[in-house]
Image (cartoon, rainbow, N blue to C red; front, top):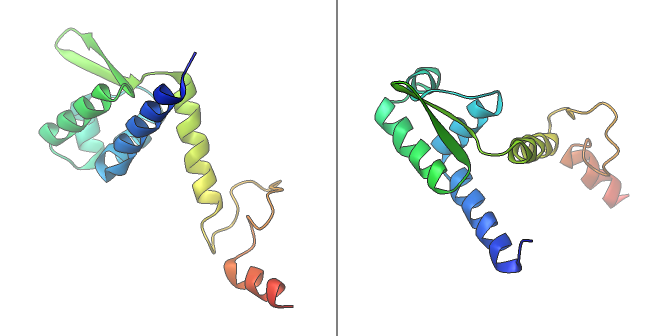
Length: 125
């Protein structure tokens, strides 16, 4: 069972992982499945050293795991629940992007799909 202290630790680890744009980009790449440092560096236009350093940080935070495969190392998000949580978080943030259409056609979240200008007009009336 998670205590309050361990929940705070989890939040701090996630915050640290996602606070850096490169680590966020790596996590987004890994949402679609496992990756290898060389391929990740190619896909993201980063050096292998940079990718390896950020993957080490993500590993230290407990967010990704590394599995040796001969001379290669495969990285993936540590837990399917975490993959789902990050996906939900990203989808939620995108749904609230002002001026962008809602990602969910059946969205029933109040004010989610209404641009700020229209919301302000409705409040003023």
